Structures are given as C-alpha cells and as structure tokens.
Length: 298
Image (cartoon, rainbow, N blue to C red; front, side, top):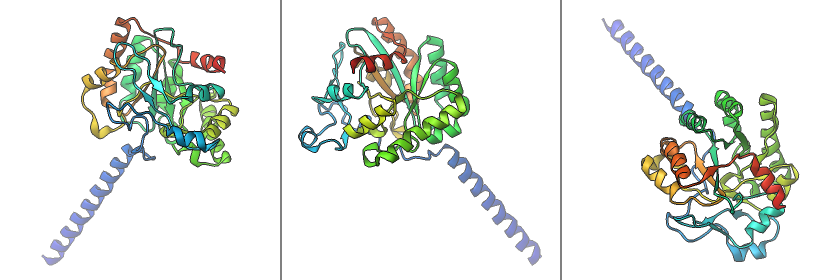
C-alpha cells in the first residue's frame, strides 16, 4: 500500500512539472524578445507642451549628441505640430522627415511592430477594405517569427520598414554597430522577400546627426512622426473610443501618424479613424511617396 501511495505521489509531481513547463512555453510564445517598456514615442504627459530635445544641450553638443524626437501637438482643428527649432532643417539635410506635404490634406499611416500581440491581422483587414497602405516598421525577431503577416504586408502593397534588429538606441552604438543593426535586418528581409527596405525608424525615437548621416549614406529615409501617443503600453489600453478621439483630434495636413500594432485600442478604432478622416476631407497618401518627399526636400 505504501508503494502505491509513493507511486501516486511521484505521478502527481511529474504531472505538475509537465503542466508548469507547458505554461512556461505558452507564456514565452507571446513574450517579446526585446524589452519595449521604454518607448519614447510618447513618454510626454498627455497635455504636455514640451518637445523632446534639450535645445541648449543640443546646440553645444555637436555631431554625436543623443537627441529624442518630440513634437508639440497642434491640437484640434488641423493645427500643425511644432518640432524642436532647427530639427526640420537637420532632418532634411539627411533625407529624413517627420511630416509630408503640409499644403495638402494628406495623411500617412505607420505602425511600429516590435512584437506580435494578435492585432496585426485585423489591422491589415481594415487597411485592405479601405484601400489604404501603411509602413510597418519591424524588428529582427518579428522578421523571423511572423512570416505570414509580413508576406501579406508585402503582397497587399504596404511598405515594410526597418526598426533595426534588436531595437537598440542608435546613438549609443558605434558606426559599425549601426550598420549591422540596419543592413543586417535589411539583408535578411531581402533574402526572404526579394526587396530591400527603404524606410528606417530609429528605435525609441533616439537619434543624432551622426546616426542620420550614417543611415542616410546607407540609403535609408529616416521616418519620424508628427503624431504619436502612449498606445504602446499594453497595460494601459482605454477602449477604442479613446484611440479614435486621440487620433482624430490631432489630424493635420501631411500627418505621419505613429501607431503601435500591439494596441487593441488602435486595432478596434482604425476603421472608424479612416472613415472619419475622409469625412473631414483628408485622404490617405501612398506611403512610398514619402521617399520622394524626403529626397526632394534635400
């Protein structure tokens, strides 16, 4: 009897261990390979009038100073956002941009794809139904894990942009490391899909004149943004209406909207956002045109 009891205890322990291992494996499937907990896309308070750069430090810093992209929102009624003084000229010097043609009621959609959270398929469905294309900025782990979604992006006329292999802040890297982080991802993308990446979005919105020069020399167009909010925080989703109001209250000519595809709010609100923007007279531009805008500015 004692042997049977001991055997039963062993079986129970083994079963519990197997269940634990299974739960760990399942949890790991949705765990991002890279920590995205410090996205700079919108760390500013909701009603902040501050932008991202320390102007005094930037002026005295020189070529390699780490800068953080930021804009002061223009607010409702189509007000244009205001970037830090001097940054539009700096971006245009290196075939980079944060906004399209401000003389036209044209909007460009961009999505950052650090990891897949189950919402990209719905986003792609909405874009397909509304005949809108977008730039999807992906990282190395996303490229290796999400072949089906990326193939759909390519086949349905979207641009797949470079968000680097491992989402490291570019100004903290050497020239050689910057090249590896960008061209390494691009090379692998070409091997899988037969085309190169055109657009680059610096991780965390961090850049320097040095990183702009290096990546421009490599042939990339750095695409920043004229609107973003803290949608990347999956623990702070507030419902589709919040996302709808946040985006539509900040529409403006030439807008480059940064939305994170990990946000359930964005996925649920996207169709309504597109329809409301069109109702207000905006159109969604072909994102591939942004390359011509950037190089024409230069």
